[in-house]
Structures are given as structure tokens and as C-alpha cells.
Amino acid sequence: MNLMRIPIHRFRRPGIRSFVVLPLALACGVLGSDVVPLHPVVEYEGDVYSYQPADNGAGPLWCAGSTCLVRVGSHTFASGLETIPDAKPLHNCRWMLFALGPQGWERLLTDPAGRTREPAPLAAFRDGGFFLSANPTLVPDAYSGPARPEILQFDVAHPGSPVATLLPKWQGEPKFTEHSYRSLAADGELGELVLFQNIGYTHAEWTFRDREGKWAAAGQLKWPWGAEYAKPEPIRVCYPNVALKNRAVHFCGVSDIIEPKPEWRAFKKELTGREWDYDFRRLFYTWTPDLTQEAFKPWVEIASREATCGWIMPGDLWIDGRGDIHLVWSERAVDERLRERFFPDAKQSHAINYALVRKGEVRLRRTVARAEEGGSNEIPGGPRFQATPEGRLFVVYYVSGRDAAGNVLSENRVAEIRSGGDIGQARVLPLEKPFSQFFTATVRAGSPPSKTLEMLGQPAGGGSVIRYARVRLLEQAE
Image (cartoon, rainbow, N blue to C red; front, side):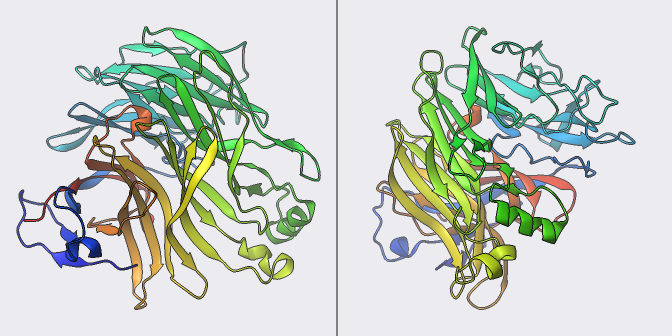
């Protein structure tokens, strides 16, 4: 990928580090003067908190389809996950709440009583309210067992204590556990929430809170049916990107079931000694025009790596002003453990792919970035969208591997997805510590569209620390 880097020696504010990465089209004078080019400038980055691994199968970024970072007006909040000393898995964590202030990040609150397994997603309204999704266990001394979903409501004027603890209303009495796989989404402008929480391998329960503060609707989202498997079964869909806008809900997630192909499952058991190995290789999407009035439409399979036992992970979902749905995700072509025996001629590739969906039909597909055997070794992954108030759409992602000169890569990049699906030239985010995994202050959780990218996540290279960065994306070079 052709990246142009031009050093900057003067900055508008002390402590801001950056360099300009100009697209070739701009360097050649192709873009119009009214189009502000990408010019990433880091305003702030630093640690939020450190943690001890809980060894319970989850972690601070486990709720990958939701977010633990929201912006409310001029305020930014983050939730964290603390491992409780001497507590045994699975319920050996508690949530924390942080606010970004003039002196950096401040811990506002730690769950005083509850014990849980998973991180706590956040959502926000434009009127100053914000919300934390909790799932405390009802049997803290047991290895596993029932849990009770809660929503803690906060106000930006007094964020150190919750205004209320809300108990969502569900259809019937679902049997929730510490394995919630929950997803929280908000319509920040209208002040409405939707919460999904999985029940085993059959379906997700959902509940909707309207602008009047009432739990106005609830139901079930049944998983797609895997009739083509040797043993037909529901295809549990996990780690979804969920968006709520004008009561329309869009849901896109990945298959997450025990290996369904008997010959592959037997071979994996030879390798690992385990009876189970989960597949993540089919990307599914569904939607409803009005959650309170209409059922979800039939599932649409957006992408698959079923043929070569590959891997897929959802990245992000955005609803544009026309109501079109933009999806981005990561793909790996081949499970190399199985290649020699089952598909020896298959070539490995790693890609970030994009699709535009209109009324359930894929109208456009593009590859944002790709590495493949015999070609580029710049391996992309972990994409997220950043939408601006003007409706421009950018995709931010992580790149590892090696460049054409053989240099080791570890960096975050950003590229624009333009009208018609053209992918703009990628630019590097000049972060001191790039993120290998990260959340953003996403519109799906109620944060406003912005020309400023906010990131919360795990720095590349490991370590038990969660960091934050704020990057201005659009600014004329000095």
C-alpha cells in the first residue's frame, strides 16, 4: 500500500505528535479544494487502567460488538473490568466506570456488590444521560449459574453515582446466565435503547426502552437454521454489531457453534485433545424496520469462509442518511492446521471487507485491505467505522506483519469509504502505542458523529493495560 509520510515540525498545541500522510490524488492536485483531506493529529493518548487476567474466558474487550466508550457532549466516559482478588472464576470480576478529565482518567465508581464475568457495555443519549449494562450473578460462590441483567442510568452532571438501576422487562422469564453475549445499542438523538442477551444456542432475548422511559416491547431473535450441516442445528450468532435508529434495528454477527463438520471436528480433537472447537466463519445479518411493530426479516448470509474452514469476525455497522447499511469485517481464508489434509491447494489471505446493504440485499462489495500468500504481508484486522457530521465514512484498523521492505509493522491506519464504494488512500495514525484491538465512541451506542476519533483498547504487543487515544482526522496541514 502506497503511504506518503511528510514530517510536521510545528503543532498547534504542546504535546501533540503527528505527521501528515497525503493521498497521491491530493499530492497530484486531483481532489477539489472543498474536500478536507485526512490529516490525523493525535490530541491525547494514555493509560486508563491496568488489570489482572481473570482466566474466565472473557476479558475487557470481550463485548466486541458493543463499546465501553461513549461521548456525552464534551464528556467522555469508559467502563472497565476489574478482576476481584482471590475470587474464583467464572464470576470473578466487577465493572468500573471512568471519566476523562483535565488531569487524565479518573475512576468514578466500582461496582460495590455485584460479581460478573463479562465487561459492561455503555450507551449514551444526547440529553446528557448515559447507561451501563451489567449482568451480576445470582450465585457468586458457584462456578456457573443464573444472572440478572441490569441497566444503570447515569447523568453527566453527577456521573459518580447512578440515577437509577433499571431492570429490563423481557418476554416471559428467560433463564439468563453469566455467559450473556449481550449487545447494547442506543438511538442517541431519540433517547431510546435496545438490549440483546443470548439464551444458550437457540436465540437471543431482546428488550426495547422508549423515549418515555418505558420498556415498550420485548421478544426473541431466533438463530438461523443450519439445515445443510450433517446434524442440522441452530447457528448461534455472536459478537454482533447492533444499530438502533428511528426504531429500526440492524443486527450483524458471526456464527459461533461447536465445529459442525464431523471430519474437521475429529481432526481438531487430534490436535487439541478437546471435544470442542468453535467455528467463526459465517457472517449473518437481519433487520426490522420497526422493532415495536414488525418481526425481524429472514437472515441474510453476508460472507462465508466455510469451504476452507476460515475465520470471520464482525467489525462495524453504520446506517447512512439514506437508510443504507454499511458493514465491515475481518476475514482469514484458511485454518492452516487443516490445510495440508483437507485443502492443500488453498492459499492463505487476510482481508478487511466491506459491503453496502439495502433492504436486505448486498448492493456493493469492496476490499479495504488485504494480505495474501505470494503478495503483501501487511496483515489487516479489527476494523471500526468513524462517521462525521457531514456523512463521510472512514474505516480504522490495525496492521501487523511486514512491509514490502521487510520491516516489522504495527500501526493503525484509516481510509475513507467514498460514495460509490471507492476506498481512499490509507493513512497512518501516528500513535505512540498502536491498538491491536479497540472500541470507539460509536454512533451505534449513541455518541454523536465526529471528525475526532476516540479509541479505547489493548495496545499491540500485549500487556494487561487498557489505553485511550483521541485523534483529529480532518484538519488542513499547516
